[in-house]
Length: 446
Image 1 (cartoon, helix red, strand yellow):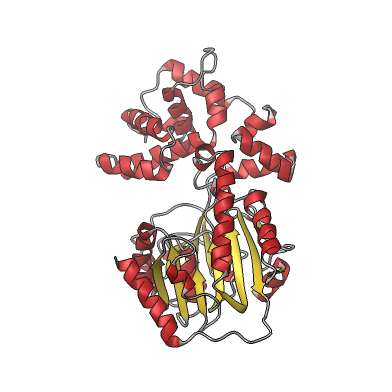
Image 2 (cartoon, rainbow, N blue to C red):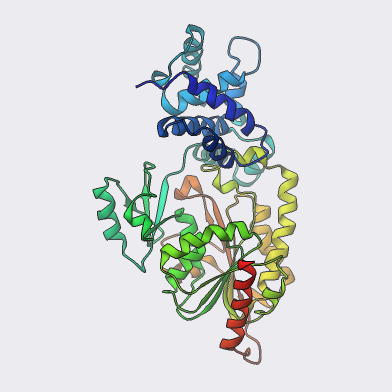
């Protein structure tokens, strides 16, 4: 069944706005669909996939979109290329003979014969950084995977069910799900079915979460009854995973500077069945609410704000919205946040620094800088941490999960431990912990 010709106009309209790169593509798409309620589910899906295809292949489409005309690609031709990639030429209605012939000529191009930079579909600054890190051959392998859609990963909430039961219940839907190789409570769904109406989702038995993100939560090694902080919690995906690992015991703080992001955690938290999570809005990494817990926390996770270059399969617009200068600004913020978060860790406690970036300056560079300026911390080699958590991954000092090698988003993690002092640290009193939590809850409610 062909799509209505008018859908090409809709796609062109929203694409113009997205290519200004003033806001994330998913936010712009969501707003456009809300403003155009007459678009059906099939039409919305086709427009979204068309846009993401254009963002993934922008260099190639722009270079060849003016095929045979001697001019650059028009917005109409970009949409034709994106839509053909997303739904197939046979699903498009209202094409002229010239447009049909144009698409046929494009499909005949052997992309493997194109120059490496053109094949990679990356901005030049990012391509050069990847080549410096990985070499040209591996950069092309990495780029090829980054320019494909990501699979859908789920995390099973073990407070409510187990992986085998979820697989069986999804099969009834029918949705085929397979266990992830590294995360013990993860499932991978190759297609992208609507999950929000499933009883499993409504009851909090499953959450959407990339396998790499699940591995990060597990690396923290949180135990029952501990005091734990998720320092940059965002919408709380890792917070919920950590809370389940802790079996809803102890005290788990979800810190973030954005009240809006933490607000998104609330319905997820309600579904999860967790009672040990305490969302706290903080002004910055040196907020008084942070200082109140200094030296009292068993484990701290810092999933730092980053360039997001490991998430390009899901957010292909990021590579066009980000610039090299922006990465340099981020590294200053990352170092400052890690320094602030480290003050929470008690003697013998652990600190995990993580990003969803693939760039060394945001990863290894920050870890090395932290160790050089914090002699009271030592690196815990990642192979040791993985063995402790029984995660079947082979790594050296750091975790480096790569889309083309591990099938996950790109993630980095370093684990630090605060060296024991001569005198044992004063344990946190229950009333002090409660006071900090109550103050945080009041701030979050304001």
